[in-house]
Image (cartoon, rainbow, N blue to C red):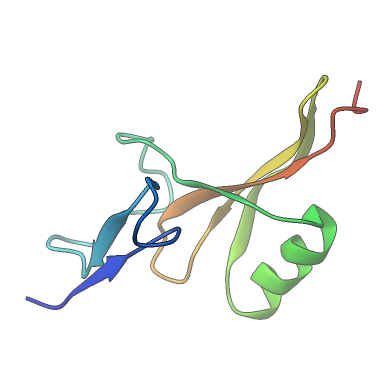
Length: 94
């Protein structure tokens, strides 16, 4: 099985490490409900990343929304129809 280790920090520090492998089942359909957790990725500029995601074949499934005192978030689909989130920290958001 193809499997890739993902390390999020220095080897001698605790991090949120994990792995990535190819899908083992069928690709989800467009109307498939969320049935698992959604990985959310921190970005510096959410507007820039929404453009980049679409440029590379992804789709926006929920436009940018505010979380008061936290920042901005949006949900997207990658090219294999996996849902993921992106978030820009900004405590000034109301």
